[in-house]
Length: 100
Image (cartoon, rainbow, N blue to C red; front, side):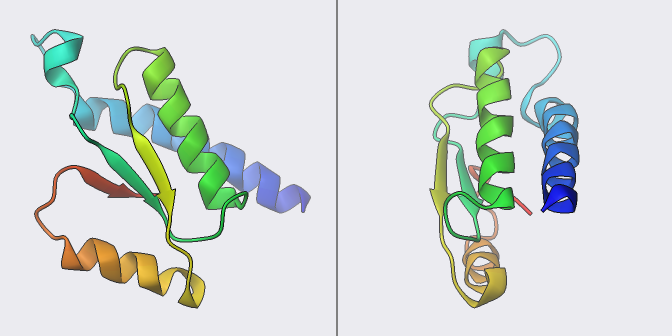
């Protein structure tokens, strides 16, 4: 259980450090740089490591003013394969990210 918590914390830190540069552009105001309607898919049940990581990253982005009204939703099934299939089927959708 300790290892899972440590991995979730490391993943949250990485998301906080890596996602903001991807969703913002230099020279734009923060409102213009935000991705309206951004959704984060969690391929597991609520309360798991991926879920906590995604919700922590979204909260950090919203607290920093980098993003607002981001939806985190769970799509459990087949050890994450159902969620992965959803992302693959929505190729080109720049408003969908998956927490892994």
